[in-house]
Amino acid sequence: MATISPLRQRMIEDMTVRNLSQATQQSYIYAVARFSRHFNSSPDRLGAEEVRAYQLHLVATKHSWGHINQVTCALRFFYGVTLGQKEAIERIVFGREPEKLPAVLNAEEVVRFLEAVEGFRNRVALTTAYAAGLRVREVTCLKVDAIDSTRMLIHVEMGKGGKERYAMLSLRLLDILRAYWRQARPSLWLFPGQEPGSHVSTGALQDACRRARKQAGISKPVTAHTLRHSFVTHLLEAGVDIRVIQALLGHSDLSSTSRYAQVATNLIAGTPSPFDRLSCRVVPLE
Image 1 (cartoon, rainbow, N blue to C red):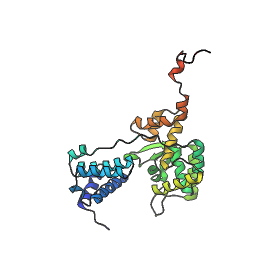
Image 2: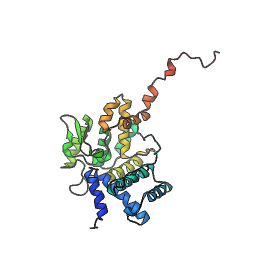
Image 3: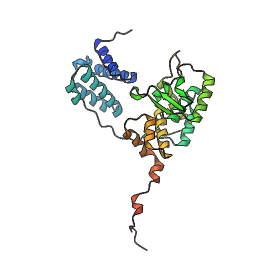
Protein backbone atom coordinates (compact mmCIF):
# COMPACT_ATOMS: atom_id res chain seq x y z
CA MET A 1 0.00 0.00 0.00
CA ALA A 2 1.38 3.43 -0.96
CA THR A 3 2.17 5.67 1.99
CA ILE A 4 0.29 8.95 2.32
CA SER A 5 2.47 12.04 2.62
CA PRO A 6 2.01 14.20 5.73
CA LEU A 7 0.78 17.06 3.51
CA ARG A 8 -1.91 14.93 1.90
CA GLN A 9 -2.90 13.50 5.28
CA ARG A 10 -3.24 17.04 6.62
CA MET A 11 -5.52 17.99 3.70
CA ILE A 12 -7.65 14.87 4.22
CA GLU A 13 -8.01 15.71 7.91
CA ASP A 14 -8.95 19.31 7.07
CA MET A 15 -11.67 18.07 4.71
CA THR A 16 -12.88 15.48 7.22
CA VAL A 17 -13.20 18.06 10.00
CA ARG A 18 -15.33 20.20 7.65
CA ASN A 19 -17.49 17.17 6.78
CA LEU A 20 -16.82 17.29 3.07
CA SER A 21 -18.33 14.29 1.27
CA GLN A 22 -16.11 11.41 0.20
CA ALA A 23 -16.72 12.27 -3.45
CA THR A 24 -15.59 15.86 -2.86
CA GLN A 25 -12.54 14.73 -0.91
CA GLN A 26 -11.51 12.36 -3.70
CA SER A 27 -11.94 15.01 -6.39
CA TYR A 28 -9.93 17.59 -4.38
CA ILE A 29 -7.07 15.17 -3.70
CA TYR A 30 -7.01 14.13 -7.36
CA ALA A 31 -7.00 17.76 -8.55
CA VAL A 32 -4.12 18.81 -6.28
CA ALA A 33 -2.13 15.70 -7.25
CA ARG A 34 -2.58 16.48 -10.97
CA PHE A 35 -1.51 20.08 -10.35
CA SER A 36 1.59 18.86 -8.51
CA ARG A 37 2.53 16.40 -11.28
CA HIS A 38 2.11 19.08 -13.94
CA PHE A 39 4.97 21.07 -12.38
CA ASN A 40 6.81 18.01 -11.05
CA SER A 41 6.97 19.65 -7.65
CA SER A 42 5.33 19.37 -4.24
CA PRO A 43 2.29 21.69 -4.23
CA ASP A 44 3.43 23.52 -1.10
CA ARG A 45 6.42 24.76 -3.12
CA LEU A 46 4.14 26.23 -5.77
CA GLY A 47 2.13 29.42 -5.56
CA ALA A 48 -0.52 31.63 -7.14
CA GLU A 49 1.50 32.16 -10.33
CA GLU A 50 1.72 28.42 -10.92
CA VAL A 51 -2.00 28.11 -10.22
CA ARG A 52 -2.70 30.78 -12.84
CA ALA A 53 -0.42 29.05 -15.35
CA TYR A 54 -2.16 25.73 -14.66
CA GLN A 55 -5.61 27.28 -15.16
CA LEU A 56 -4.44 28.68 -18.52
CA HIS A 57 -3.14 25.20 -19.40
CA LEU A 58 -6.55 23.66 -18.62
CA VAL A 59 -8.28 26.28 -20.79
CA ALA A 60 -5.81 25.69 -23.64
CA THR A 61 -6.35 21.93 -23.47
CA LYS A 62 -10.12 22.54 -23.74
CA HIS A 63 -11.22 21.24 -20.36
CA SER A 64 -14.77 22.20 -19.43
CA TRP A 65 -15.35 25.23 -17.23
CA GLY A 66 -17.03 22.92 -14.74
CA HIS A 67 -13.82 20.91 -14.46
CA ILE A 68 -11.63 24.03 -14.27
CA ASN A 69 -13.73 25.51 -11.49
CA GLN A 70 -13.70 22.22 -9.59
CA VAL A 71 -9.89 22.26 -9.76
CA THR A 72 -10.00 25.89 -8.60
CA CYS A 73 -12.11 24.91 -5.57
CA ALA A 74 -9.58 22.21 -4.69
CA LEU A 75 -6.61 24.56 -4.96
CA ARG A 76 -8.34 27.31 -2.99
CA PHE A 77 -9.01 24.78 -0.23
CA PHE A 78 -5.45 23.47 -0.28
CA TYR A 79 -3.79 26.88 -0.12
CA GLY A 80 -6.37 28.67 2.01
CA VAL A 81 -7.10 25.93 4.55
CA THR A 82 -4.36 23.31 4.56
CA LEU A 83 -1.49 25.77 4.05
CA GLY A 84 -3.26 28.63 5.83
CA GLN A 85 -2.44 31.12 3.08
CA LYS A 86 -5.62 33.19 3.27
CA GLU A 87 -4.32 35.79 0.83
CA ALA A 88 -3.89 33.08 -1.84
CA ILE A 89 -7.66 32.51 -1.97
CA GLU A 90 -8.21 36.01 -3.35
CA ARG A 91 -5.62 35.42 -6.08
CA ILE A 92 -7.04 32.06 -7.19
CA VAL A 93 -10.05 33.11 -9.21
CA PHE A 94 -12.94 31.20 -10.74
CA GLY A 95 -13.76 31.25 -14.43
CA ARG A 96 -17.22 32.34 -15.48
CA GLU A 97 -18.94 29.25 -16.77
CA PRO A 98 -21.15 29.85 -19.83
CA GLU A 99 -24.79 29.19 -18.94
CA LYS A 100 -26.21 26.33 -20.92
CA LEU A 101 -29.72 24.99 -20.74
CA PRO A 102 -29.78 21.40 -19.46
CA ALA A 103 -30.63 18.68 -21.94
CA VAL A 104 -34.14 17.36 -21.31
CA LEU A 105 -35.94 14.28 -22.63
CA ASN A 106 -39.62 14.49 -23.45
CA ALA A 107 -41.99 11.87 -22.03
CA GLU A 108 -41.79 9.61 -25.09
CA GLU A 109 -37.98 9.74 -25.04
CA VAL A 110 -37.90 8.87 -21.33
CA VAL A 111 -39.95 5.73 -22.06
CA ARG A 112 -37.72 4.72 -24.98
CA PHE A 113 -34.61 5.34 -22.96
CA LEU A 114 -35.64 3.44 -19.82
CA GLU A 115 -36.91 0.48 -21.83
CA ALA A 116 -33.54 0.33 -23.61
CA VAL A 117 -31.46 0.12 -20.39
CA GLU A 118 -29.72 -3.26 -20.17
CA GLY A 119 -29.93 -5.25 -16.95
CA PHE A 120 -32.83 -5.29 -14.50
CA ARG A 121 -30.86 -3.63 -11.69
CA ASN A 122 -29.64 -0.79 -13.91
CA ARG A 123 -33.08 -0.26 -15.43
CA VAL A 124 -34.76 -0.04 -12.01
CA ALA A 125 -32.00 2.22 -10.65
CA LEU A 126 -32.31 4.69 -13.54
CA THR A 127 -36.10 4.50 -13.37
CA THR A 128 -35.79 5.48 -9.71
CA ALA A 129 -33.55 8.40 -10.68
CA TYR A 130 -36.25 9.76 -12.99
CA ALA A 131 -39.32 8.88 -10.89
CA ALA A 132 -37.92 10.54 -7.74
CA GLY A 133 -35.63 13.16 -9.29
CA LEU A 134 -32.50 11.77 -7.63
CA ARG A 135 -28.87 12.45 -8.40
CA VAL A 136 -26.96 9.40 -9.62
CA ARG A 137 -24.86 9.32 -6.43
CA GLU A 138 -28.04 9.38 -4.35
CA VAL A 139 -29.44 6.42 -6.29
CA THR A 140 -26.30 4.33 -5.86
CA CYS A 141 -26.30 4.93 -2.07
CA LEU A 142 -29.95 4.05 -1.47
CA LYS A 143 -30.49 1.41 1.19
CA VAL A 144 -33.35 -1.07 1.20
CA ASP A 145 -34.88 0.53 4.29
CA ALA A 146 -34.85 3.95 2.58
CA ILE A 147 -38.11 3.00 0.86
CA ASP A 148 -40.93 4.09 3.19
CA SER A 149 -44.10 2.66 1.65
CA THR A 150 -46.21 3.80 4.61
CA ARG A 151 -45.54 7.49 4.05
CA MET A 152 -44.70 7.05 0.34
CA LEU A 153 -41.29 8.64 0.73
CA ILE A 154 -37.69 7.79 -0.12
CA HIS A 155 -35.12 8.67 2.55
CA VAL A 156 -32.06 10.13 0.84
CA GLU A 157 -29.17 9.86 3.30
CA MET A 158 -26.30 10.74 0.97
CA GLY A 159 -27.51 13.96 -0.63
CA LYS A 160 -25.21 16.63 -2.03
CA GLY A 161 -23.07 18.16 0.69
CA GLY A 162 -23.99 15.33 3.06
CA LYS A 163 -27.55 16.64 3.45
CA GLU A 164 -30.45 14.29 4.13
CA ARG A 165 -33.90 14.79 2.66
CA TYR A 166 -37.04 12.93 1.58
CA ALA A 167 -37.94 12.37 -2.05
CA MET A 168 -41.29 11.33 -3.47
CA LEU A 169 -42.18 7.66 -3.90
CA SER A 170 -44.75 7.14 -6.61
CA LEU A 171 -47.13 4.17 -6.58
CA ARG A 172 -45.83 2.94 -9.93
CA LEU A 173 -42.24 3.12 -8.73
CA LEU A 174 -43.19 1.28 -5.52
CA ASP A 175 -44.68 -1.56 -7.58
CA ILE A 176 -41.50 -1.73 -9.68
CA LEU A 177 -39.25 -1.71 -6.60
CA ARG A 178 -41.29 -4.50 -4.98
CA ALA A 179 -41.00 -6.64 -8.12
CA TYR A 180 -37.26 -5.89 -8.23
CA TRP A 181 -36.84 -6.82 -4.54
CA ARG A 182 -38.66 -10.12 -5.02
CA GLN A 183 -36.24 -11.03 -7.81
CA ALA A 184 -32.93 -9.53 -6.61
CA ARG A 185 -33.41 -9.84 -2.81
CA PRO A 186 -30.94 -7.06 -1.93
CA SER A 187 -29.99 -6.92 1.75
CA LEU A 188 -28.29 -3.61 2.70
CA TRP A 189 -27.89 -1.64 -0.51
CA LEU A 190 -30.94 -1.41 -2.74
CA PHE A 191 -28.74 -1.62 -5.84
CA PRO A 192 -25.71 -3.76 -4.88
CA GLY A 193 -22.43 -3.74 -6.79
CA GLN A 194 -20.17 -6.52 -7.98
CA GLU A 195 -18.14 -6.75 -4.78
CA PRO A 196 -19.87 -8.22 -1.70
CA GLY A 197 -21.19 -5.48 0.56
CA SER A 198 -20.76 -2.73 -2.03
CA HIS A 199 -23.35 -0.66 -3.89
CA VAL A 200 -23.51 -0.12 -7.63
CA SER A 201 -21.03 2.48 -8.84
CA THR A 202 -21.96 5.74 -10.54
CA GLY A 203 -19.72 4.66 -13.42
CA ALA A 204 -21.78 1.52 -13.98
CA LEU A 205 -25.00 3.54 -14.23
CA GLN A 206 -23.42 6.14 -16.51
CA ASP A 207 -22.16 3.34 -18.78
CA ALA A 208 -25.68 1.93 -18.84
CA CYS A 209 -26.95 5.38 -19.86
CA ARG A 210 -24.54 5.59 -22.78
CA ARG A 211 -25.56 2.19 -24.09
CA ALA A 212 -29.28 2.87 -23.63
CA ARG A 213 -29.08 6.23 -25.42
CA LYS A 214 -27.49 4.53 -28.42
CA GLN A 215 -29.94 1.61 -28.32
CA ALA A 216 -32.92 3.98 -28.11
CA GLY A 217 -31.65 6.10 -31.00
CA ILE A 218 -31.73 9.35 -29.01
CA SER A 219 -29.54 12.06 -30.51
CA LYS A 220 -29.43 14.27 -27.40
CA PRO A 221 -26.66 13.73 -24.85
CA VAL A 222 -28.06 11.59 -22.02
CA THR A 223 -26.51 11.00 -18.62
CA ALA A 224 -28.10 9.90 -15.37
CA HIS A 225 -28.41 13.60 -14.47
CA THR A 226 -30.46 14.17 -17.62
CA LEU A 227 -33.19 12.11 -15.98
CA ARG A 228 -33.19 14.51 -13.00
CA HIS A 229 -33.37 17.49 -15.37
CA SER A 230 -36.29 15.85 -17.15
CA PHE A 231 -38.07 15.09 -13.86
CA VAL A 232 -37.93 18.76 -12.84
CA THR A 233 -39.00 20.05 -16.23
CA HIS A 234 -41.94 17.66 -16.44
CA LEU A 235 -43.12 18.68 -12.96
CA LEU A 236 -42.95 22.36 -13.93
CA GLU A 237 -44.87 21.65 -17.12
CA ALA A 238 -47.51 19.86 -15.03
CA GLY A 239 -47.97 23.03 -12.95
CA VAL A 240 -46.28 21.90 -9.72
CA ASP A 241 -45.22 24.86 -7.58
CA ILE A 242 -41.53 25.63 -7.93
CA ARG A 243 -41.03 25.74 -4.15
CA VAL A 244 -42.35 22.18 -3.86
CA ILE A 245 -39.89 21.15 -6.56
CA GLN A 246 -37.11 22.95 -4.69
CA ALA A 247 -37.81 20.80 -1.62
CA LEU A 248 -37.96 17.61 -3.68
CA LEU A 249 -34.59 18.33 -5.25
CA GLY A 250 -32.93 19.38 -2.01
CA HIS A 251 -31.91 22.78 -3.39
CA SER A 252 -31.05 25.32 -0.69
CA ASP A 253 -31.30 28.19 -3.18
CA LEU A 254 -34.44 28.72 -5.26
CA SER A 255 -32.33 30.11 -8.12
CA SER A 256 -30.89 26.61 -8.65
CA THR A 257 -34.42 25.35 -9.29
CA SER A 258 -35.63 28.36 -11.26
CA ARG A 259 -33.23 27.75 -14.14
CA TYR A 260 -35.33 24.74 -15.14
CA ALA A 261 -38.23 27.04 -15.94
CA GLN A 262 -36.24 28.05 -19.02
CA VAL A 263 -36.69 24.60 -20.54
CA ALA A 264 -40.32 23.98 -19.47
CA THR A 265 -41.54 24.70 -22.98
CA ASN A 266 -45.29 24.56 -22.36
CA LEU A 267 -44.90 27.15 -19.60
CA ILE A 268 -43.11 29.41 -22.04
CA ALA A 269 -45.56 28.80 -24.87
CA GLY A 270 -48.63 29.00 -22.61
CA THR A 271 -47.74 32.25 -20.86
CA PRO A 272 -49.64 35.18 -22.42
CA SER A 273 -47.53 38.11 -23.51
CA PRO A 274 -48.43 41.52 -22.00
CA PHE A 275 -48.61 42.66 -25.60
CA ASP A 276 -51.81 40.63 -25.98
CA ARG A 277 -53.58 43.05 -23.61
CA LEU A 278 -52.70 46.10 -25.65
CA SER A 279 -54.93 47.63 -28.26
CA CYS A 280 -52.14 48.39 -30.67
CA ARG A 281 -52.40 48.68 -34.45
CA VAL A 282 -49.15 47.58 -36.11
CA VAL A 283 -50.38 46.30 -39.45
CA PRO A 284 -52.16 48.98 -41.55
CA LEU A 285 -55.76 48.37 -42.46
CA GLU A 286 -56.21 46.96 -45.93
